[in-house]
Length: 291
Image 1 (cartoon, rainbow, N blue to C red):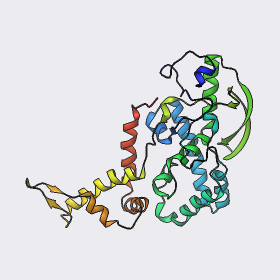
Image 2: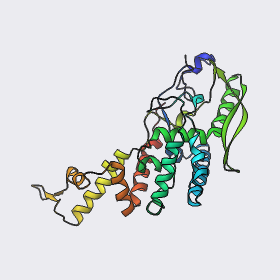
Image 3: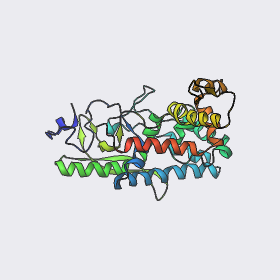
Image 4: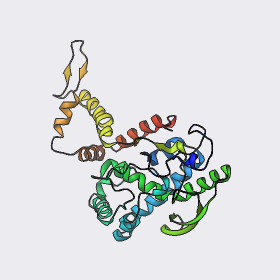
């Protein structure tokens, strides 16, 4: 049963501003932080500020040598069951990120601190560079960080549709103290659980950023142009005289390295590649809506 059916809203998904999720299940969807940058509306910008505050605090802990503090900031975060959405690639619905995963992320940044300085500036960057970190995990962290904004939005929708709410404690990010805390909020309750509504304009069916897509499109295209410009041995000439460089030949040069290792190598030499890729993806999503 969908939320709209449970609360007898008599509205279709097209008529609702939030994603109409099932009360007793989860919708396979992402809350991608890159959509906040792309959308540029006031609410999305507020979410950007929340995300920036959290990630700057996280990186600052690492820079100051307070790695345990940084680990604690992410290790206990769970896939928020109240949104009734998530990709859960691991198959463990609602499981926390965990100390081992959090330690790996922090250790990786520490070990690469000099070379990734300026490269990893946003939460979504972790999924492009760090092995084992995907956009499903970034989505989970994002929902936790912007939960106060989601709760405020949910309460407004409940007032709009006269949906009853009950008090519950929620784990939220305090931007002033830069720490997690528990606080009581009023939320709708359906089928034995609390629900947090999510605006449909920031929800995607697939993650916006993808490390393989980044490598195969932006990076290889850039390398093709560089090989042509320098007239290397990888340049072939077509019958009409045009130059061509095959991507398969470029991939052979990086043989033995993972996609993320290849991305890191190329972005260290040319940091603008990451921003170019992101700018392209943000333009793609700006006027595209999945719900």
